[in-house]
Length: 210
Image (cartoon, rainbow, N blue to C red):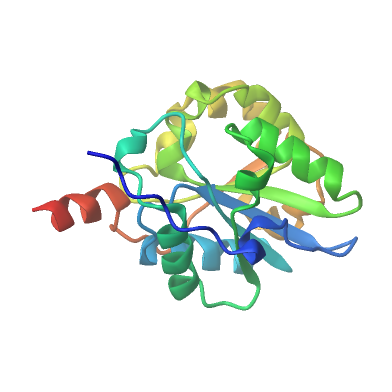
């Protein structure tokens, strides 16, 4: 049985968002399969605590570390993200699909090359920090942009035990200096505590299947 073709992605999602020189911009990437209020909470905390001018909500075409068979169509994940990410500072995008990049290291290198003069910070949930050393060229990611790790349920201690936290312990920035993080030279990272949502995409998928 042939699978039905996936709907075309709107061209507005396939362009890299525009950012003027001097702005502080957060990069929040993921499969968002599906996006949920927990993702929106991470984005809002990052915008506020990092004093960001923009946040790029980057919906990836695929995830090399996850089962792509469970991945909803990109258009569906983009539309759901738009419904959840209502802050006007958040730009929902899928520009990675245009450039056929599969790994975060390549995405960040592309963003850096295309946006001289813009101050970027990579944003991730603490639950991703535990497996971060399994990512392709993870050391290169840490050396490209500063990183803000946002607290997630059950992952608060990951910033102490993870391979990346131990390897780059010398580059850890005090949480009180988070508003300056985007302006710092990599490597620099901080752990941001705050409200946490127990929602997870995998749990939502299981509920939908059940």
